[in-house]
Image (cartoon, rainbow, N blue to C red):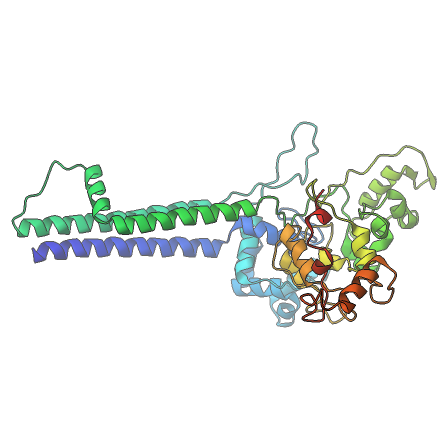
Length: 459
């Protein structure tokens, strides 16, 4: 009897150790190779302005870059180069200096990414495959297809977990049978597996009921969390028909947001700048610093401008911009109310566009990081915890934004008592008996002025 128990116990331990080792091995392989799906987002946010995966752009193509560093220098230097190329160059690395010289001594911007994030980026880069142009499409950078590799890992882990559970159940069953034999009790050899499972479940109905309830709750929670992601498009950055760069226009040239998006102070929509606004400068500027005449020629085509004749031809072709910030049809939002009356800075919702090429939906972290490491830039007044462009995001801003002197206040509320918000402001300040629950902290929030009323934002 003792020998039988010992043999079964040893087999169970071996199975468990094997499963754990396989799980560990699977996880490590995945961690080292990176996740292409995660890497796509990081690449588009940090690298896409200068690099393509498979062809030279402002910077060289990235496919095979890791292996080239391993062959010519080391993988450690590869990570260091991405984080701070100038430090590697100054350190005297021969391959780094060669790369610097081969690329016209163009300085690569230091990237605030971890080694794990770099692994994700290059998993995406190496998996990048340009889509084949369909009928009527132009071949080129149509898009990419990336294999979703994380699902396979989860299936393997689930299978190994079931293997361990099965081994444990079999071991316990064999031990129970061995114990019955030692006591001289009869064993029902005609009992099927299903009957055995039902008998075991009944004998342990308390635990079975408990874990069944836990399982149902987990399924409901996971399902609800997935439902909460519907319509959330943080980091959405579609390709545009013209390779416009906010970094150049808003950053290097210092053009104010409201010059191009001039309807933002008088309309509910910020609006896409008209071609006429572009032509204010591009009648004279006909060549870009990075793209030459190619992209500006598209503006001329849209405006019907002939640069050789220096005149309009009347033959125009509208630019088909792709909308980036989309709200549901039942949601009302007014830019002028926030910008003019509320005094909200563009960066509060759109982030630091001076670091972007074409527009994208900023993540919560992007918005919270505005101005954090930049002494020349004010930090955002509100720190968010909810995903961008969701209802919780708007409610959170209305809760944390104040209508009080010295804070992020509604423009003119305190100074102009005759204005709409000024009347409400003074009413709340003076009638402390009626509004004392609002004045416990001597701060009046937008929510307390009706910013949480459903009809304010929903038709």
